[in-house]
Image 1 (tube, rainbow, N blue to C red):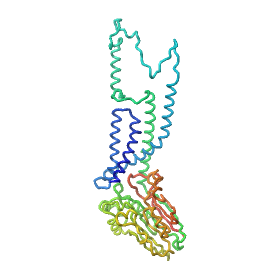
Image 2: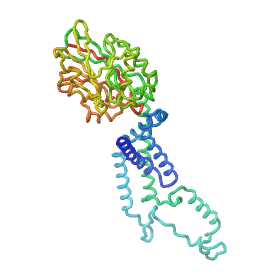
Image 3: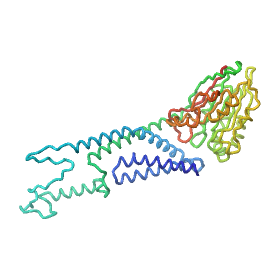
Length: 456
């Protein structure tokens, strides 16, 4: 319930801000504003419904429209916030210009009389036109001269069908018509720029997210590595996120790209799935075709613990597919007459399911003269790995931020966002992941498969 309340509260605040900038500021009171307000309320309700319902079989149909709007909503927010400063400056200039215009002395006409302000002047009836057609004064409320009745009807019809606030019985915003028009122009220009920018960004991000992952080739020097192990190659992939927005071709493409690397070891570092074996089992079957010299290994990520049946069924499914789960354990990789310790620990989320990461079980009692590579889903697990003298930790989880500017927020929780870093003397490589979570959008953080080569 706490998660639901948080999502609902954030969605309400964001949509209220969008309403003020995209609806209230760009329209006059009336039908258009009411219609746009209702549309925005509907889109706002779609956010929590999508985040909750997409985890269930009945809610999968919401995934594409719901997550698409979430991405557009986010980038509308980003663009509008960035535009706040130029928008405020434009309004400041406009207000100063209006004050100068009002304060300027009006020109003096004949007879020493000032000419009326063109905006605020009230037309004065011409005495010549106040006479009736027979030459006498017209009666109160009567048309003033020939053709006046038709003109009056035209004016009445114009007021009734003008669509202005007065015609709708609603108050007009304060200021002269000229000032109101300029304010609307500024607001509509900012809304148009934000809308075009958001749609272009999301469109490009969808193409990136659904395209081929980038192959990152990284060499990591380990000071204690036996020279005979130099050149040992790991294919590292994380955050594949099989789910309602991915298909069989997504898995097949990742397997094909990994196999083309001809790696010695394949490491799948968590967040493989977003659903149960019954729902997603067919999408995982291509993993049986993964090829490497010394095997494919897997550790759980936080999303494995979010599935309805927990990670246990997926661990058994992966074993049948030829993928070796490392549940707080280690194996020896023998290569060219030397040995490397490869260990794996459960994700920190496992603590809520009675399967917490156990570094002592995975790393205790080993020969510390040998180099160790640890698979741990979250970079935040690196300080504990450093206590056990791990040389290199391979992680995922962050998606590299997935959508800029989230990459600026991730460091508040994780010590490394993407690429190679160091935590307490232990080197940490964080892959951006080969899939996506939530919106099928990646901006500034393309999907990745890493070929990592160890060097002495």
